[in-house]
Length: 549
Image 1 (tube, rainbow, N blue to C red):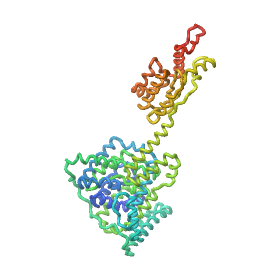
Image 2: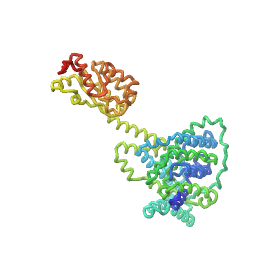
Image 3: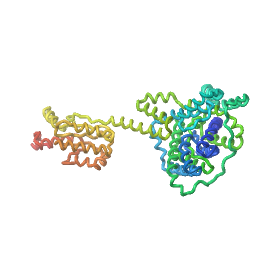
Image 4: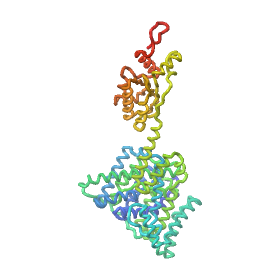
């Protein structure tokens, strides 16, 4: 934290200015009041910064969490929300101790990029009412709220608010290109506030009165008899907090060079933050992508910036509430609109879209789901689609190819012998995974084997087998046996024997010793079987006259 304190101090101050109206708004939206949002931003923001696993993460109340909390307030009251937050914090600490954060590494980059794009769109659209200077319409769907805000603006245009928001956004965007190290967001917000005050712009609605101080620590939540009914909402809150925080930390890593968060430590920090915040009347907290993006874009290099953000908010609550109350909401909307624009990495999106068609589909679908639904559904949809497309790609690599077995024939054989063996024996090599996504196509191909007497399955190149693949293999071997075709296997790996044996597939190959370690041994066994059936003449041994079996 001592490497570049000046940049961190400026970044923390900028984030605090951006976070203040968000904390107030989310506190009110949750049903616990503005002071709950401020308590969360200060207490949870400081603890998550100290104990979390990301150097750049900024935590506090978020819009996604507010949507989850509203029905809890309606059913259990404010005390229920505090108890849910406390339980969720304990669950997050448990997840950290179980090292569950490492599984975030399995989220594809296309899901993260789509999620980031969707969040940027949500952040930008959420600012439309304030940027247009209209009251925020009722509703929790950002597209619907934006449309109603546009309708209200069309009926009574507020060009003052539009001008302030546009000016602040332009100053930030152009200033970042000109001098990235200068905090143009602070300059723009201060300038917009001075203009609104000096020119007496009545249309520039300010933030409004702030509560003076934070609630004292309290343990008066709800009756413990309500604990069972709060457990399910707490699990949902913990899941959302983990998902949003880890994705936010991952997005922060992607916006910087050389930063890498510790997912398990981040869960631990978020858990402590959510245990402490309810004690001060705060709502459940998560890593906040908008504030984290502002933090990164304004030059933060360590967790000192997030600590400064929490400290500045605490000072504002106690000492500077009257001054901050005069900041126009339109100016803050301009800050977030510029932040949303800068979150979108056009080069990364273009590269991801060009990588594969599957990546492009997952990216677009995740972004649309984030915008139209919510964070949890968006990530679930993205993961399911990405997983399905990945399975399809892996399944397409599984092949059943007929191969020429003659190079594997032991000893010297004439062309006539080769031709005679080829009339009765066919060899297939199985390549790739033999699992549920490819098994039934494999069964169809193998069941259509021509009328021969022996089928040799070369399985040394099978990469993996699951229960479905083993059952399909057993079914195929059984069908061929019923047609009078003997099936012999070669090269079965030790790691695949357990699953094949568990479903009885190896029992069919073990019948009369039809499983072999190598393909030449299988071919020798096939020839011995054909000789025993009278289809081939035994090959006499030159020295002893003993037939080779």
